[in-house]
Image (cartoon, rainbow over all chains, first blue to last red; front, side, top):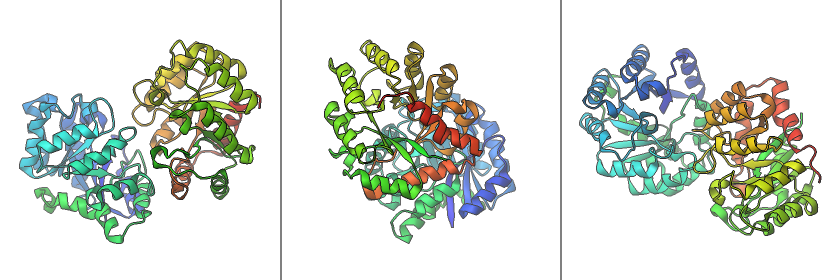
Length: 245
Length: 254
């Protein structure tokens, strides 16, 4: 079984087509994220839209909630409401949302995630405020919270992804857009399969392509299973909503 | 249809990024396997080490099959000998274009020192392929400024803005007709976005081949698979893979 750790659900997305693409790629389930404008400002609307799709397809999807920390106390309430409705993790994009990953403004959201036992998908790779080493500092402050390093610093901060992973074991590499013999192999050789989670980043790349790249790695079947399924399940089992879904 | 890859690097001879050098024959074998007729070969070592020496090496590497391996050279813009090196590369080595990486080489595309060099390149019809998509010095609009100053200079955005600056690459190409975009290192979504928003006549395709040891070139084939998965009309494919790159290189003395 394969679980996709990150898909963006665009407003005009054809859910039937996403499911068909998942079937073609052999993906059983995927975690859906709100789209850019919803991550930036319309958090509640985005969360509701994604949760609605998940509610109609509970055997295929999980939901990320999003929340912009600039909304202060309301941002925590928005996140908690979404988690109560079934979201399994928090998606943040500090570039879109206008804060640096070092800014204490995000702490209340991380603490709410810690309290709920969920995890965070944090976009990285966009200077100046969404960088792998900044995520490392945040993850060091919250060692009991797990983070997926969205896009693993791609493109030009990809080189910072490895030291970030090596120094902070509660961060997982996002496999999206990496090739089997180069980026994926480099990550595997540096930190092993235990810190890698398959994410397709669909629709920006096809799910089939992402799965094929992991499958083409020259690693054991067990390592592939860790990347394609087991590591993410390890995060999800801590989430109350996981059992419900 | 002729297939031209507009973005391949000569594998490093100096272990840049851990790459072990391999001979041109090995890359030609890969091109044969993938049905690629021609590749534009860009410097890698020359961006870090003695550019003239590396340009000579690259020209020699491409001479293995000059019909299929098309050499581009680089220079250090602040070097007083840059203009002399341009003349040498064009006239003595028969090189066909320039690769510049302002972020790695540490200069701004519109610095004063670039002006006489670009004037020369424009007069010779020699294109410049820039790394783009990263700050500082390599944003599409910074490079677009150079295209504005030299409207007859062929300026290629070597990565179409990468991920975060794809929209900026589109805006740049829409404003300046002498901007070309090599769709290199871009996921399929962004390639399709460029195709939908930029004149097809300005688009090229590249694999970024050569960045890795000889046994790690499988990503080149994956890049071509990604392009093919766009299922473009034959006419559009022909323009991107054949007509446009031939036009980019046309009129250049060899």
